Amino acid sequence: MKNKAVVSTSPSLWTTNFILVTVVMTLTRICTQVQTISMPLYFQHLGASITMAGLSMTVFTIAAMVCRPFVGALLDQRGRKPILIMGLFLYALSTLAYGFITVIPLLLVLRILHGASFSASSTSTSAMVTDILPEKRMAQGLAYYGMFGTLSIALAPSMTLYFIEHSTYMTLFSVTSMLSCIALLVSLAVHSDRSRLTKMAEHRNRLKSEPIAASRPVKYYVWNSFIVSKAISPVLTILPITIATSAVTVFLPTYSRTAGISGIGFFFLVQAAALAASSLVVGHLSRKWGTVVVIRWSLVALGSSIMVISLSPTLWAILLAAAVFGFANGLLMPELNALAVLSVASDRRGQASAMFYLALDIGIGTGAALWGWISDTLGIQWIYLIAGCLPFITLLVSVWCRIDYNLTSQAEQQTCPYGSTESKFAGRPDETDINLS
Image (cartoon, rainbow, N blue to C red):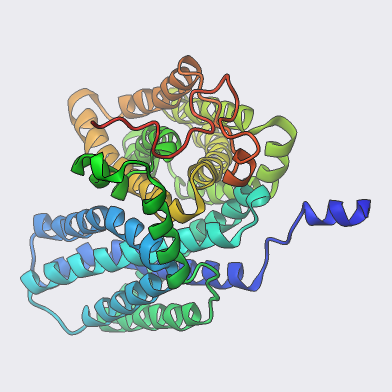
């Protein structure tokens, strides 16, 4: 009996459903990154200005950001798989249409549709994977899931440049359309335990269980349709982290040219390797040291690695920073993502996932604009000094507010409904800590 109990505490991560959802995410991520790189070039190929080429990315990002809260609510009300299939169908359709539309205004409309469908598909897969993974190994599973996303990002630039240099845009879009169609077909094989009827029943039961529903103001329901209060803490934590890391992902090539550093492409290879390595140990580190220690030391490592880029502008120092940067980022992302989804009721994980990925979208968009302004105003070397301060500020705020980053699941909270008495975050019910009246 004792051995059986031990086995039950370590359920398998690599189930058929987890593999299928990871394949879907990887294929769509490759397509998205290819189009992110190629679309500005395609617009200029059609005779559009650089400003219009940049607008093609702006409307895509805004469409994805606006749709995420609504997609999150639909995932919890209608189920994961229907939203995923609908999103992937529109995603594949819009990807295929790029090769046939050459009118710039129509392409901008297509970019809006593409952004909305990407929001639906990516939010659906992120919610589905949290349903599939065992709660006690959530952070480790999300680390593997994120690792494949990072590897797909690494493949996209070389794939894009190859087709642009040796073939045509029509061929490139045909390949990405084929990949998105494969993702759609694979998604049909995913078995969703949380079916549409189950989701609708849970949503109705949650609404019925709310006391004195008639006396609550309309803004209460508007708030709770899109915001899960217990996911706010990890979401607000990942926001400044994403703003800080965007300084590296967006402006490092420009900084390397300004500082006269060659071979900067190795930074991203080392970063990807370190991130992959972190996915192998994140579960062990969390069990050994605890989530709080892992998150706080990762914040220190992340901030330090970003500052090193500015303080020691040599290739070897930057490659060392890349290893620390990738490893720390690889620990923070799955830990905070797991915290966001495990701290809420199971019928609200879609909204929690949407909030988390919306914070990533906002952080990247805000960071690109902020660091560009700082570069023009103060100089590009100041970007990494200021960006490196953000993780330290986040750490100080988390200590000051006594945020424990408790990964207690809802099942465990039934035994201890209010969590740790020392935490300002753990174990409060989703609705009772919101006072909008």
